[in-house]
Length: 270
Image 1 (cartoon, rainbow, N blue to C red):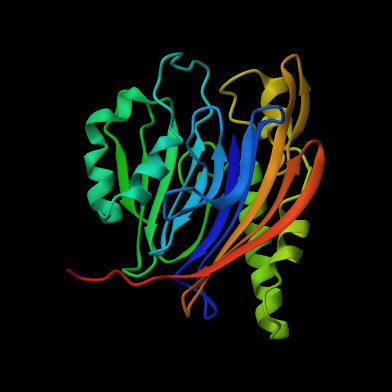
Image 2 (image 1 turned 120 degrees about the vertical axis):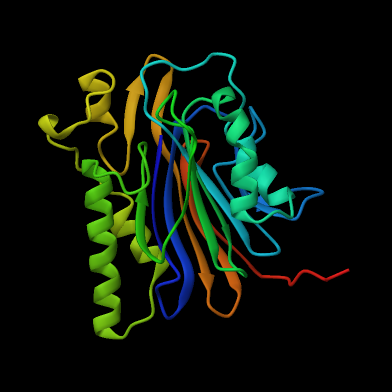
């Protein structure tokens, strides 16, 4: 599970500003944000399946995903983390790439995928759920959006809470004429452990499990080990073309922090 909130093409300082919590078992081998060897990709990496939940390219392409909360999963499904990687390795636009996924949606467990090209100001949302229905492919309009473990902008309690808090904090910065402090946004918005009221949960799986997952920041002990938020990443794309990852992540049960920045490189036409 994960949760993300972002503003797209609707801010004077940022073309795109994303805050994302990745929820996973703490003992699952993972690499923090880094430049991938032999690739023009920067992002975190799942060392089990080899994919990512959030990454970008030197050319200013961005991809991230969340899982869909569902009762039954396909044991032999393809890894959803491959989808962002495939997009970033390609030269296809978000919509073209999304349409090519239509015939393989049933090969994956439920996912929500965001594909963006900063230079062309194009962003597309893709989902293979609900089961048995055509793949969802839609342009993402400028503004503030939230993505948890249902469709984009679904009114789940923690999604609504995060979206409102994000908007409120952006308004505070605007009113005070202060530059946005990404670290402050991470600490105030993404470490929120407030759980939802039981009667407002979606009731897809067990009530106890949904309650544990209903906070923005998740931490729960399970028979398989501790599960919860193991990294928080702010991805900021400034209007001038600078991209910065500000990441707080767990490594050997200790929280660490890093910043990785670079400038978008223009593609050379052949």
